[in-house]
Image (cartoon, rainbow over all chains, first blue to last red; front, side, top):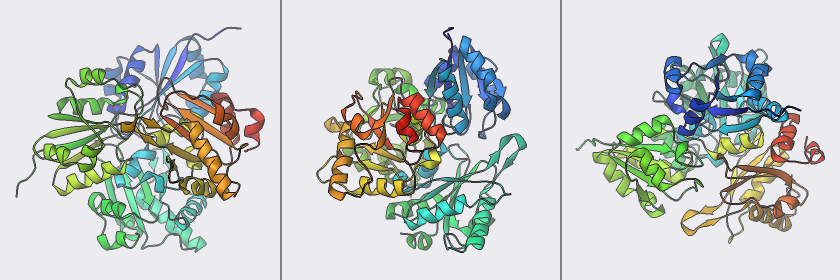
Length: 267
Length: 267
């Protein structure tokens, strides 16, 4: 039996640009034999490949969806050498990374992780909403088909007074990114089909564009108002709040331009 | 009216040591007029004050709980100068930070944020559990009083097949940190009082110690087994899984030493 001499370190880069990497992440990337960069699970709106290259001191090998899902190129490299694998956000939020980690472990490759900010903590914080008041999250995907999962999740959370964080579908390789407007349109469609009163034109919602970067935009208002608002470039995320603590209501007014009367109605 | 010339930037440092700060965070801290460090909301087990000082190029002003909750020292400094405020984890997970941000905004102080890894994304990832399968999270606090919130949260989540992430109480200034063993003991106590079958000696649980650092330890087993396991130094966190996807079950075996039969029973 051959004992692998290499290692695979998953390094998160956060949400915006190359400066979202941690000092530990940069250290590991600089000393690795091979640096690979995943180019599809998430969009980092400020990432400049040449700036990343200058930072690390070499050109990362760019991997598309097929290469990451297949995994063999990464695992073969990591059997003989130290490989730094750069990913957007925090690693292991994507199932593909968990799968890759498992396959590496089974081959006897040493696996390490360097964490980074994730939309999961950044979006609630940006809106001033309290983490422990969020229920299950869900992804709103491009139809067809029209998935009922987002609506069911929202209904369940709202019944318990909880907030819901929605990730919006993005297909980086096709250049398709769901906007907050489309996401709200799809929730209104689902309400039309289901009619269970979990979401309507007057429901308070919070749109978050380009979370975690200098061009972050957070706006709270009725679904109807957000349907028409321009949030600019992707990526976008959406929160539908449940019952608000008075401090959360104040935060939505102060940080997200919410109407005072609207948020008081959700307290 | 005097328009403040300063700013307040909340900078997350992640979960382990000074190398968890992002490149952007370090840049902002180095160029700030004043650097303040919050010393109580979370424990960063590897943080060495002298290493942080060497990195930033000056000694941060260390603030205890009272100074942060009071906030006046921070806000006064930020009215005239650029203040970098370093916090453990990702900012705005703590309510105190949201309150401080709101007060700064009301005084006309420019507020910026530099994000960092949070236990909210790191713990699920470390266990190989899928984020969108988590329900509401809760904190298990030191009694007295015995809070019913953790048990109620668990009962609700398990009924929906969802995982539950528990933050464990820590009182940094008193040097008290709840262990995974104590947390499990408190959930078993709650089951004894309530008897609704949400948690028992045979329930699958996952203990995570020192998440996000090189000494991270993740162990899955029955409540009974974890009650006696030694997880070492704080901080600790606990996950009680709901229904497992087969890939999650595999991950718990592979990354957390779970018994194959035990996790199959939760699929």
